[in-house]
Length: 115
Length: 112
Image (cartoon, rainbow over all chains, first blue to last red; front, top):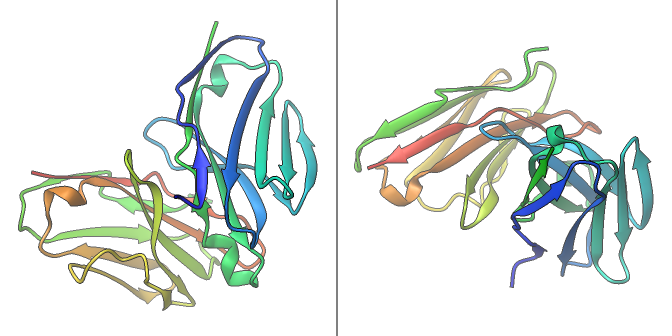
């Protein structure tokens, strides 16, 4: 079993829809949770990050972490064609500064938002 | 800021050949990471450096893989000899203490 599980999709939604992307994990040591967006032929770019449980909102994006269920989500409101990309969840344990880049990634979910 | 720069963008080589991938991290970043991305396995950490010193190479798949960081502005990942199963996109990433990870745009390696 992988430490981080993410449904690869693909997921196709109409413009304006609310998108929900999810990951589950098994390692209870994970404390930092991130979402990366990766456009085709590009490197992943950090979209949002949260520490421990709770919600974080940034514009049309909301990240949720439920540590009791080992479940994290990313919601995209009013989705746009420019949101079409692969979304990867990533996690790391709270073991000091060196751990922050030693991320464990999900497989990534391919999202297409069609006009 | 030019971001993390990787070269070449694409590399096609024959099985058995040596392959060298290059990375220039963002200036001032003291951590450098090499990741590999495939459809089957996703993004996997191969090795990372702190202040040019390798800290964790447990993700390096075999002795055929080696990585060096001779100075703060340059790192290489070498595969010798290359095999078809090494075909993947290889990403370099860097960060400084307390900052998020910044990825380059990767090197797409095809070994025939």
